[in-house]
Amino acid sequence: MTVKIRSENLNLFYGQFHALMDVNIAIKPQAITAIIGPSGCGKSTLLRCFNRLNELIPTVRTTGRILLDDHDIFAPDTDLPRLRKRVGMVFQRPNPFPLSVFDNVAYGLRVHAMRSSRAEVEAVVESSLRATMLWDALKDRLTLPALELSAEQQQRLCISRLVAVEPEVLLMDEPCSTLDPGATEHVEELMRTLARQYTIIIVTHNMQQAARVSAETGFMLLGQLIEFGPTRAIFTNPSDRRTEDYVTGRYG
Amino acid sequence: MRIPPFLTQRLAISCMWIITALTLGVLIFVVAYILYHGLPLLTWTFLSEAPRSMGREGGVLPMIVGTLWCTALAVLVAAPVGVATAIYLTEYTREGRLTNIIRFGADCLAGIPSIIFGLFGFVFFVITLGMGFSILAGSLTLAIMVLPTIIRTAEEAIRRVPQSYRDVSYGLGSTRWQMVTRVVLRSALPGICTGIVLSVGRCVSETAAVMLTAGAALGFPRSALESSRTLALHFYILSREGISMPLAFATASVLILAILIINLSAYWLMRRFVTKVV
Image (cartoon, rainbow over all chains, first blue to last red; front, top):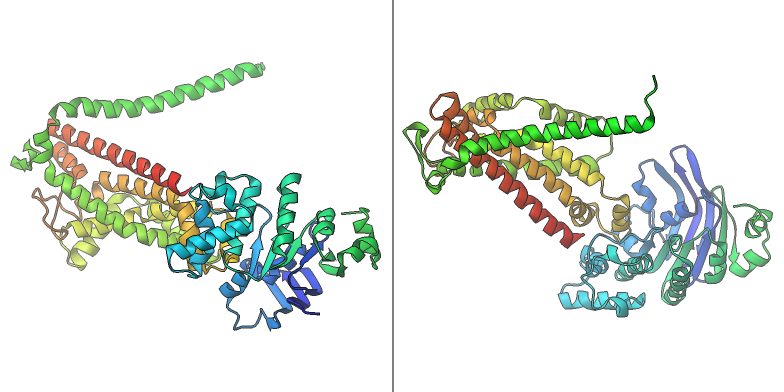
């Protein structure tokens, strides 16, 4: 079995608070992996380990290893901008920059100086907007301020912005929690399409969503990864009592 | 006796109305009074000629030029330094003793009377550095004077930029510098500009600090190393030394109109710019 991301004895502390405890997880490439669990269980924290975004918080300390394609991302020679380019993130709230649609998608290209000519940038913007099925709706309005789009379009735009830098892994932190059910369905459909090309890890407190989109699911509780396996098994035949209690709605 | 709530509400509202009207009234009275006395003398010759016989006759063109020189140079120096300091305080360092010291220093600087800056400028720029009474010495003094304003307004503006923009920018793999220049400064620009506009106003209207540093020469300044009298100082000298009250009022009118024009155009530019970016 090939593995895209593997964590080994991953521990994380916010100051004195032990937020992640010996997390060992193996994420398959080109598939959707869901992480579920009640609020505060550390699922977003785990997600933010994979692109080392937790390090923006001053008191965070991490131990253990995370291997991306068998290379430790905590190794001292890790190029952080390059890591974050490979492992991109979609946030809970749609958060386009207060720029035009075009400039939002082109942002990463410009940051990484990936394309030189205007025509090349335009081509990538188009393909990125096509990837999230926004192109037809927005092709004549690329100069529109991104904040004027609907919430769903904004979230799609954020995914386009990510896809533009040609990442390998997409981290999605409750990407639908501010969207209505219709928009949620569309974004889930988009995720399935994107999973043919990208490795996707989604954190969600919506169990039905995990059940609908993911191939594998991990259940977290109080900083521990309680159970990890094929989504069907987690939801129909969990081996741990706590997982069973959670997925049957006894708490959380 | 208990006053019924609807009455206290009425009372409070009327009090606030009266206070607001008073404040605005005083402001309008002052401006109107000056313009009433000054505008009749405000002719094209007054704006386009140099003063004659110490300012009893003639115009104020050299002072307009001197004011523009001093203000422009001061802001050109203070804005980059101030914004850079604000960026350092907010994005490049963690809160601690050092940031508190810098902030405390800036606040102290903001509370110092401008004549003290003038004295410092006189001792340091004019004498020690040998600049003499000059536009350069004057504008450097003004720059130090407005620095705290620029630092604090820029800092506030940068702090108001949502954290999510920073997260996204890092998440896309940008460096801190790219994040600051491409996202943070862009969103904070309107706030930063407000601070700069405030500073421009202070530079234009400053008297004490430039009196001791830029000097009071009546001639047309040909370079930044020459002395020049600013409009505010010209007004002060005309009235204080009893040279010509009518022309002092005319000078004050020019000053008021200049500040009005600067502020209006700055806000107009900002609105255009902001609607373009956001």
